[in-house]
Length: 195
Image 1 (cartoon, rainbow, N blue to C red):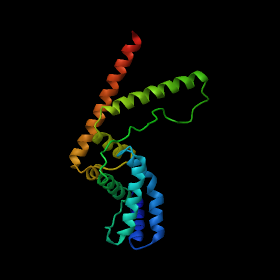
Image 2 (tube, rainbow, N blue to C red):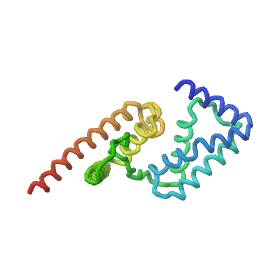
Image 3 (tube, helix red, strand yellow):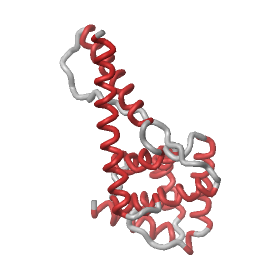
Image 4 (cartoon, rainbow, N blue to C red):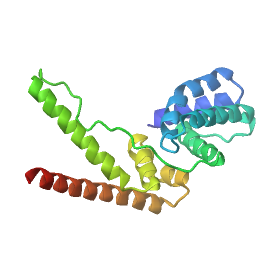
């Protein structure tokens, strides 16, 4: 991790010092992950693309005034979030598709095994989708930052504009709500099918 932060520091410094190749590397390295993060802030895909381009144009335009950083992803996430908010978009994270059936090396599955695996995957996705709907937009964004982008609580707190303790509490409560919602949904499903 420290090696990656060092690499970020030198890439950012090179960019600030006027190296255009470093700017192109930044764009190539982070445009896709920023887009993916943006999908959790807005459903408007074109607006997200526009905001990412605006962000990189501003970075290029004001690069001599930028502060140094050793964590570019964190810096860009925070900046993109501000850019989207400046465009007066309400935070409505998309429910993202998480494949709950692990894709390890399997023995050759029979047709019946494949049908059962597919049904389990669909049921898990349905349970997760229903459970995610019970969370607030804030909680969904917090979970996304923590588990999909592996940000620390201090980083999440700064991006969301809350205290570190509030970030921890938000994640904890979101996970507890998900667990309870999925458990309740499973009990309800079992009752329906047992009638």
